Image (cartoon, rainbow, N blue to C red):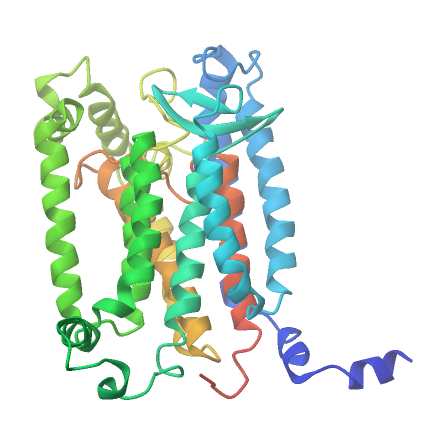
Length: 412
């Protein structure tokens, strides 16, 4: 009976049961393990001394952050393997529901009793012991929606333009011109992007807005959207960022601190200064795993946004280079899988996921080293945050799902 059932499988089902990409999986698991070890080293002083009882009451347990992160990592790894066994074509019809669901969840953060405030911002949903940021789901929703729609643009071309629009009317001629330059094609994606960005803007979550734009832009670029639209979109985003920076006091302060943290060494400049001290203290080979001094109530957010500083202090320049090489290998392998995906949807899906991942790594390390102004973007696999870790592992599961069908002939 088992053999007969196996013979009755469809081609799609057989493809979905193919082998996953072992190099990609090995890099994911390696980074997850190193991230947990680094988090344990970086977080136990602040957990032991319960430095932020108003935000997170650790009860003086030095393993508090590590144990919670390890639990999320275990669930995330299981979810990654389950997702990797799903035929990634199923993600097409899920895309709209994930996007709409993420918007609804982001709106729920403003509902009293459900929304949770932390660090002066309302970005979390708290349901019993579970607390998460729905904006993390929105990033995945944007990637899925854009990839599912844009993957059809070559296989669902409509009739010739002259048969679609009535040239005898002004409206018809206008629509024809807009269609020729690709504007009409971008309308549904623009509406989805504006809706997501609008809700995130209400939360005051600038870093999430940047990452959503990056995710959307990477999929659009890979889909072959005209470069002119990227120039126009880049100019629009640049103008919006300039307006926000110049009209918002806290953004002005961030830029000033970025230029010279020493202007406020005990205030806003304290964290970047201490982060650079930690990096410099590591030297070539570091002070040794677990031997960081900056994590003892000197460096704020040592187990979150600035965990890379602790890694550099303990493992030195050599360790920093090795870690960045591991991230680079994972990103390169991901894009290799995108190039060899069975169809356009698989390619766009991986491009969106790996571009988002790459920019998160780049932005976090850039901020910690002083190359970029503060953004509040965490380091994947390393920074404390159960929701982010689980979703990252879920995204890796999607990449692995596409990798199962790589051996198959390409299709549109």
